[in-house]
Length: 102
View 1 (cartoon, rainbow, N blue to C red):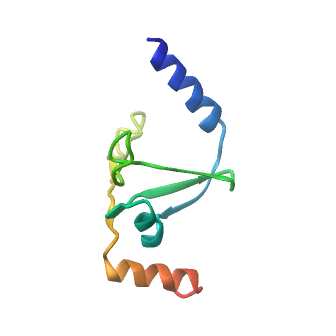
View 2 (view 1 turned 90 degrees about the vertical axis):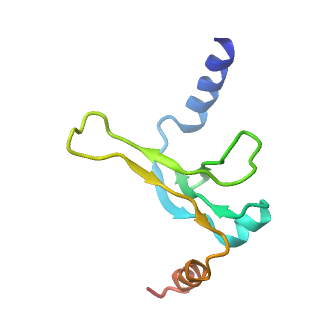
């Protein structure tokens, strides 16, 4: 029980009250630097820190994210999947985005 409490307290200090200021998939270059073959959805918090999912506690690859609003009976849950680091179309879209193209 103490372990759960300690991790919850750490998560509260890092995440509670923060605002998501940016949402994007990790770049292929960053995923490669981490030794990953997939790219997760990343959330920037208060313009100074980032959060993303991993497949396990050891950080062996990217992981999917799950979203649900249990108070909204009309809204379906959403899974934000990982995307392949080797997808050339996605890499081209990323380059165009960083160059100001649509």
